[in-house]
Length: 245
Image 1 (cartoon, rainbow, N blue to C red):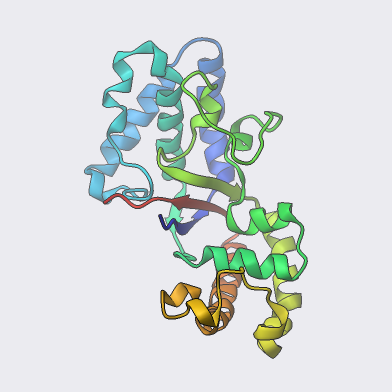
Image 2 (image 1 turned 180 degrees about the vertical axis):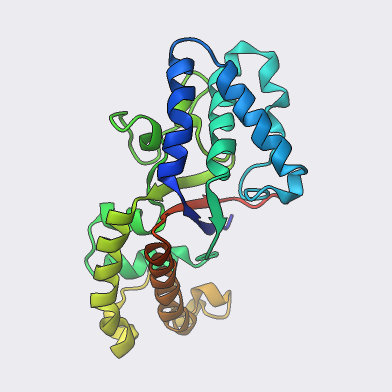
């Protein structure tokens, strides 16, 4: 099943400032301030369809059932924090379904795995709240997991953020290597084994020529997302998710 990428400008400093007293109360056993703030933001959003994260791997009101059972409280608190986080987002660019092409491109350019993941997925959202919390890629979030692992859309596969300093560093490297993509993409990029002329008739996503056409486009889109974030002095929040329906 295809997964889609969407990015937002993210005022992470504002988010961390807003949640600091709420987390202090929560960690002391009082979730009321967090609940009140989440309720306020939900009221400001109005309907599900006007939420900035609507259909981005989640929906606004799924927590109504969670509040009835204490076993789900960590997921509930995480959702409330996601509501607050969403108020610090602005709509931005997207790599759409082509984010895997960017991943293949960066690996072909000999980027280390950690930097490839930062460009596409960002850093784990858990580190916005608990910078020292252990995290590994592909980590499964369970109902018993602490609330800081639940700050993500329910149906996202990857979700993360980038601070300005990392955006600057990664943007510079993308720019430095852009000439390699523009010169002759077909000699630089090592395509997945199933992408071949023999399979081209099955799907355009298995056609090497389609990949060679799309790679420069998606590379430029990644650069634009980062350039706009730097210009706005904002971070980036990214989601890789399964669309509903």
